[in-house]
Amino acid sequence: MPRPRSLTPAQLASAALAVIDRDGLPALTMRAVAAELGTSPMALYRYVADRDELEALVVEEVLSTVDTAPAADGSWPDRVGVMVRRMRLAVGRHPAVVPLLPVHRHRSPTVLRWTEGVLGVLAEAGFVGTRRVVALRALLAYAVGAIQLEHLGPLSGPGTTTMAALPVGEFPHLAATAADARRVGPDEEFGGGLDVLLRGLAVDPD
Amino acid sequence: MPRPRSLTPAQLASAALAVIDRDGLPALTMRAVAAELGTSPMALYRYVADRDELEALVVEEVLSTVDTAPAADGSWPDRVGVMVRRMRLAVGRHPAVVPLLPVHRHRSPTVLRWTEGVLGVLAEAGFVGTRRVVALRALLAYAVGAIQLEHLGPLSGPGTTTMAALPVGEFPHLAATAADARRVGPDEEFGGGLDVLLRGLAVDPD
DNA sequence: TGCCGTAGGCGTACGACGTACTCTTACGGG
DNA sequence: CCCGTAAGAGTACGTCGTACGCCTACGGCA
Image (cartoon, rainbow over all chains, first blue to last red; front, side, top):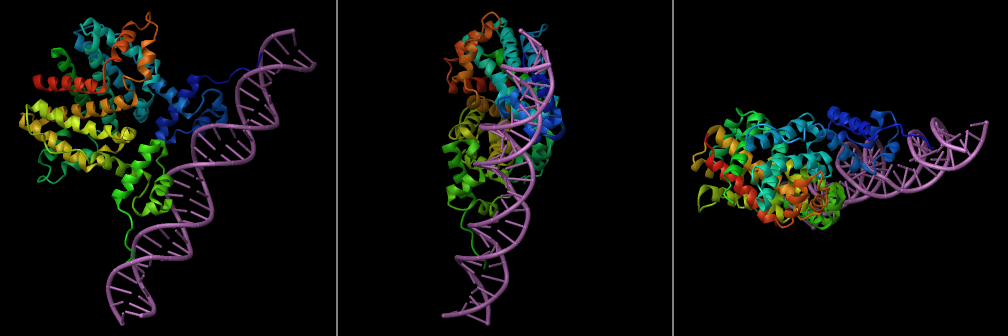
C-alpha cells in the first residue's frame, strides 16, 4: 500500500556506468549518479546501502553481458579459451571500470555462472581435485592480470615508449623488447598469453 | 645556502607504509602520514606533488626489497620462476598495498630492473621478438593477477566458503571445486599456476 | 659576529566527497 | 475520501586533498 519505487537497480547501474564511460572512474560519485537520474543524492540510499554497493552494481552490469554457457565446439583448450575471451570482451566495452573488477568480482552472480561453465569444461577434460582448483585459479589470475595490464599499461601506451628509450647500456633487453612490443596488438598479446597458459594446462603431468 | 630539508623521500615512504600496515589502505591520507612523521600535512607537499606521488613512493618502497639480479642456477623455467616468486614474496610482506601495485607499477625503477632480469633469462633461453614480448606480458599478467587474487579473494577466505555452500543443483562443479579449494594453500596455488604457465612457455611451438 | 636571502614548514581555508538525520510528499487500500 | 506507509528531498557534519600566504630556520657572506 505504500508509495511504489520509481527506480530499479538496473537503472542505477546503467546511470552509474554512463557517468563512468563519459567522465571516467573518479567521476563516479553519489552526487553525479543522482544528477544523471535527475534525483537527489540521498534518494540513491533507498536502493544501495553505500557507495561500495553501487560499485558492485556497476561491475555486475558490465559482466552481465557475458555468455556464461559452456562453449560448445572444439577441443577443451579452445572451449576454455572462448570463455576467457568472452569475459575480456565484455570488460573491453567499458575499460574505465577495470579497477573495480578485482575488488567486486566475488559478489557477481555472472562470475559465479561463468566459473561454473569453465569448471564444467575442465571437468569434462578430466581435471579433478587440486589440479582443477589450480587450473581455474591460474585462468582467473591470468584473465584478471592481463585485462588490467591491457587497460592500465597497454603495450601501445607511453610506458612502452619510455622503455624503448631507456639507456641500452643498463637495460639492453628491455629497450629491445619494448621496441618489439610496439608491433604487438592487444588481441595478439592477450591471445598469445592465453594460449601459453592453455598449452601448459594441456601438458600438465600431475 | 637555504634551509636544508629535514625529511627524505625514503622517510616519507616508510611512514606511509607504516600507516598502511597498521591501519589499512583507506587510512593512507596526507594527514595521517604527516602525523606519523610529527609534521603538518602541507609539509609533505615539499616532497611530493600530490597524493598520487606518495602512493608511488610506497609502491617503490615495497618493491625495492626484491632482488632483481637474474637468478643464477637451474633450467630457464626454474630461473624465471625464482624471479616471479621473489616479486610475490616482497608484496606478501605488505598485503594491504596490493591494490596500489597495478596502478603505479610502471613508475617503479625496481620493476624496470626486474623486467630486465627476466628478459635476460628469456633471451638466454632463446626467446626473441614477439615471442619474448608475449612471454613477458604473460608472466607479468599472471603475477599481477595471482597476487591480487591471493590477497583480495584468497582460497581460504569467505568467498570460497560461500561457493562451497551454493546449491549443488545449479552449481555442481563450483560447489565441489570450492570444497577442494579449502585444502589448497596459497603457496601451492601460486606455484601451481606459475608452473603451468612456465610449462606452456617451454612447449611453445612458435 | 651579525645579517640577509632562500626555501622549508605551517595555519588557514575551500570545495567536494560520503552519508546521518529529519521532514515532506505521493501513492494505494480501506 | 482519507490515512498509513515508505519514497524522496533538504540540510548539515566530518573528512578528504590541496591552494595560498605567512613565518621561520638555516648557511654564506660581510
